[in-house]
Image (cartoon, rainbow over all chains, first blue to last red):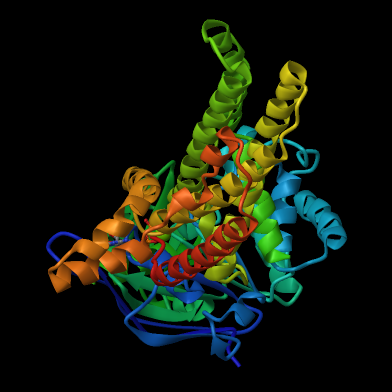
Length: 303
Length: 254
Ligand SMILES: Nc1ncnc2c1ncn2[C@@H]1O[C@H](COP(=O)(O)OP(=O)(O)OP(=O)(O)O)[C@@H](O)[C@H]1O
Ligand SMILES: [Mg+2]
């Protein structure tokens, strides 16, 4: 059974004035395996937040289906299994961190005593130790984001849904949150998160779905998407006679006394390496340049 | 438990707002300053004191009823804190009912603090404790609950400014609608007559909760009428809450 399955989701917004229709989600198909980290990638305005809101029942949709563990994701029962961090979260600023977590826990009908202990552990987990009794008014943006993360875990959810979890978090904090996401995966949870920060995504996700203008244009295992795509090999070498290279039709660039050459195919790579060694040159490095998620992303988007 | 959590959180939010205290403060201030007015009046000073005291508590508690409901629901949606609630296993009806009880508690605390000061003041000044005035405040409380349910209804689908306008209008209409009673029977045109009948029964009749006249003229209170008013309030509030939930269930949170 899939952790999350969305099939043929469509959503139009109607503007109040001209009754003009905007097709915001055209055809969303997403399938997330249990226990994996799924990255939901797309440019601004592609429909990531809208998809998540449909899934959680915050807005209605026109057609399609959305399941959590095989059951309707919009039912109250299924929401017990979900932890959710909204985009740009905002919490009651008159509460303290501990009060907010207790309030969140009570909405899951968790006994107060249990919630209090849990709250303490979670604040520690997200690096807000010692801030238990600080009013949220005095929290910085990144601290709010961390608190939002903690509040999404209060019910020990099977599935954690995070809308832009890294926004507003500094590099150290991002590293910590990435580690946290990985530790969630290691404890058997499924994590679904949206982002447009490619580097963060590339480092932790198992599967990516790329959304563009309301459509999923690519979905697959990150390792598959990336390994298919060694673009070229970059060979750096030195101590070879320049005229020799020219007479053998080997293109190169000079940089800091090193020659750099780029080769598309594997056969030619071996030939060049042999050639350099035979001519008493020295190999500095051979790097296969792979397609990064960014390249894939940009290629998909530009068509 | 979920309803209780939402209700208590609503109460917390309202009571951490300075305006709430400001309105209570003004209520108390006017009760106390009514003593000054008695210096200028001849005749029954205790009566003037009661009159002004009741009027100021009434005025400020109605203000609290109208504006806290609208303000809290609006903020919850505008600042998107509602996402954190509705994405959890909390139904929308649970949210509305929680909000209602939270507002009811907020109003109760506001009213009771003004009332306690009023009674202490009356005891000090005239040495009398009029139970009928307590009944007046109980009925006022039910009226406040109706007003706050009306504000909840409007803010479930409209902007704060419109909600305030609608709620204040209904409050004012609610206090004159009883004059309509005889008038509606005299209408000849059947369509207009039907419409007036419907309006008469749909619009809130808030004069039911005003027993000031019998207090002022020292007549006895009609206990069956009071019970009737309370039943009316409970019925009316339930209808409003159901309507609010129906509207709120359809609402999209953007
Ligand atoms: N309430 C609304 N009414 C009309 N259009 C809307 C509404 N909400 C969102 N949209 C439109 O839907 C599209 C998708 O918005 P959405 O918020 O889902 O994007 P997103 O992928 O989350 O972008 P971002 O990365 O900026 O958060 C946008 O073009 C937006 O203009
Ligand atoms: Mg978004």
